[in-house]
Image 1 (spheres, rainbow, N blue to C red):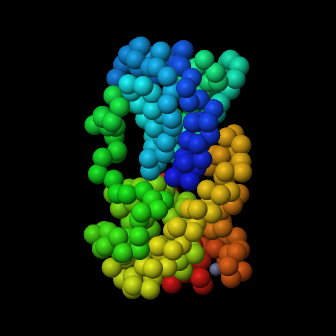
Image 2 (cartoon, helix red, strand yellow; image 1 turned 90 degrees about the vertical axis):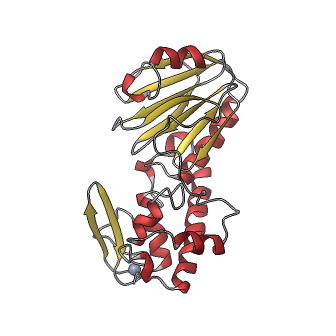
Image 3 (cartoon, rainbow, N blue to C red; image 1 turned 180 degrees about the vertical axis):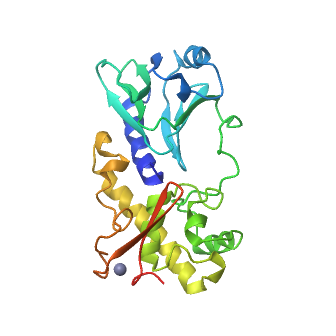
Length: 267
Ligand SMILES: [Zn+2]
């Protein structure tokens, strides 16, 4: 699923391409994607509004218009593309937003993503939006506030990292990457971590997310997809070689989610 570094880069790209352009048409190819209001109202309200900016908010992407915001939760496989000419929709395409300039196309192979249109600043109809923690990439998030916040969450450390109530923006894949660099096993109980480990976790989190964003900034919008995460060091590499120690990568699957880790590097 797209996590915060992806959504940050996608947002910057969309803002640069679209700010100031007016929306001329909304085409909804699959009605299941629209939540919180009838499809006709979505279109009626959005058409004529000028696109102001696009921002990532944890694992959501927010497109700010004049009076409304389009809020998108891309879930597992949501993808954003920009086209300057009309094209015929495919089975994966859920929605297109045409403007005076280019059009944004939102597609989703698993069709789990959700799109909302809300009055600016009112997120009450957006599922999973409220009660989230600060952004994992917020420069104002200090080690001290990280330590204090972490104490309020129990259970396995990987689940805490993925919990948007703790911090917003980290998902399954990048949690594995962060824990490899922190040298901590994903199944460790949060309460079992000592101060030194918590410090390592904080530093790894910042480093991993920043490094991934730096890689993504160099890519085209088309290449910012979860299928093209060739920069991952451990996630999804079960049976492969750990890049840090040369040992074998272990992998377990719980529900739909894979956890990959190294038994030598992570304790
Ligand atoms: Zn290793």
